[in-house]
Length: 312
Image (cartoon, rainbow, N blue to C red; front, side):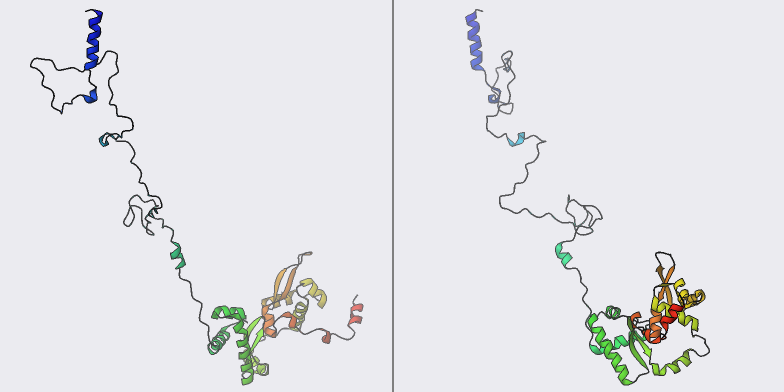
């Protein structure tokens, strides 16, 4: 075959070539093939790349050709729309259990934080109602009958759940009423609190009833030691012995055992124990504080300065 005939043959083949996307498929009715003729072959020029399924630029691929592993398109919320609030797990509910949305996050057994409305709705205890004067007076009298030591106004107010400023005037009124009625007892303030006491004019009768057959009186040495501690407190044992001029170890142990004197630390320089009077001491003497002790000047002798010079 000459060169011209070969060129004409290649030109005819190129002109008769049909792209694959335009070729009829097997579903379509194929063109009848003459009996005995070989089916047409898809002839591709030698060295040419196999035809690809080309989609025109800008055209969306058909729906059935979307890759199976492609992520789904996220839901789009229109502009200005408020997203729906996520469902909350009830308090004490287990995620995935009844009453919990599927896939909701949470920790099993851990209750979720209560809302602000629930916190505000917490029960607040209401204050106790205020007692009238007659009821408050009766309650105070009942408490004062059972106390074994003076009780303060603040403690009485806390027990009765009343304002502290109401307690003092009512107690003063009760004390004035007992005195005016001439009762054998009185309400008196002592040792920083209030307590019922027998009246001094009936002391002989009470003493005979309480101390009948008992020797409860303090000795002269104990009274002197107690007086030194009361006016010089806090004071060491050596200082008390120096003032009295005798050893007072045994007497001091007696006063401690009676509850009239107690230890209150140690002296910084010598390390000796310091002693002071107790609340029972104030209660027994009917005093509110140590400042109410009578002054010593009227009980001192006239020649006290001469006695002091003689002992030097």
